[in-house]
Each structure stands twice: as structure tokens, then as C-alpha cells.
Length: 253
Image (cartoon, rainbow, N blue to C red; front, top):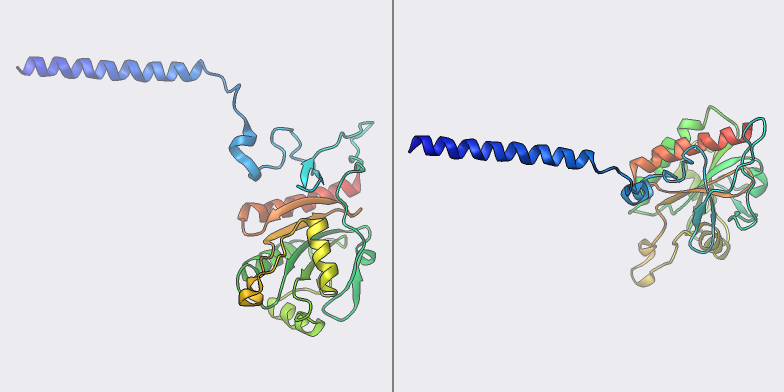
């Protein structure tokens, strides 16, 4: 009886070994030809399938599709020329936390990161604004060609003095981070048409029902939109910092 049990166990062990070996051989014989990195990594990658991880896209269309134009090559690689259809932020002028005019004119030739917020926000902003402060501190004392701007979506409430106190409480360095207020209509049009930010309002329960964006938008020195990020994601914060550096490298080419 014991002999029979031992025989059965031996056969089962042999079977398991054979199955394991076959499995390994099957894996070796199956190249990753059908592997699609875009499907696997989704929006966590910048341009894995195109091999352009060291070059930022432009955006086009109502759905803000990213695309990478051809790069001219000569003795050295040159920055891609923005195509006509690329989304470009139009000129704007608002008032900052110090009651001074600030807009496209002051940002000319500079890289900037933009977002939308409001001072009485109790939802997304207490998370996103400190994260953006971390990005700002990464560059504040290192270069003069990077700025940050935050548009309020409740400009009737967020006057310059209110913005100034909010910024002070948050520890914002106003030298290169500007909190902007102005015409509600103009801010909303800019948010929706140029950045694709969701600033719809739900007024049934008051101002806290603003569905405002948790995104940040990277704009190059020519005013073209070059990056869109979800500030709630740690990976995106890291991507923002890396992409700012990429744009700075473009400026030196």
C-alpha cells in the first residue's frame, strides 16, 4: 500500500516538473511582438511608443490630442517648429495679488505652469496648491525663465487683498508665482477654450460646488501648450519637474 502511495506521489511530482518546464519553454518561444506599451502604461507615459521621452508634445483639436512634429536635423538636433494647428494660449491681462497688471506681456519668452483654483476651496485646492508649491520651490531660485500663475475662478470673491493673504498663508513666493483675478467671463473662456479646464459651476448648494480643475498646464516660451498633468498624482508632479527642465533645454538649443 505504501509502495503504491509513493509511486503516485512520484508520478505527480514528475508531472508537475514537466508542466513547469513546458511553461518556461512556452514563454521563451513567445516573443513580445504584440506587447503594446501604450496600452499597458496609459497616461503614465509621455511617448513610450514613439520613442520621444526626451521631447514634449504639442496639442491640437477640441480634445487636446498630443502630437510630436518632425524634428529638423543638421549638425545638431534642433527644436521642433510648432505647427499651425498647435494650441497656443492667447494673450491675456489680469490683476495679480499685489493689484498689478500681469499677463502675457510679462510672461513673454518664459516657460510657465498654470492652474485654476479659488481661495475658499475646501476640496481639491488644499491638496493641489501645496504640491504646486513644491514644484515652484524646485525652480524659484535657480532660473529666471520660469513662472507660475494661478487663475481664480471666483474673481468676485478673490480680490487682490484676498489673494495676497491666501498666498502669504500658503508660503507662496510672489516674485515668480502670481495669483490672478479679473473678469469672470474672460477667465472662464480662457479656461475652457484654451486650456480645456472644467470650470462649470453647480449653484444649487453654493460656491463649493465648483467643478474646478485638478490639472496643471505647462506652456512654453512661445505660448504653446506643452503638457497637461493631474496634480493629485505623485508621478505627474515628478513629470512636471522633468518636463520644465526639458523645455529649458529646448531654449538653449
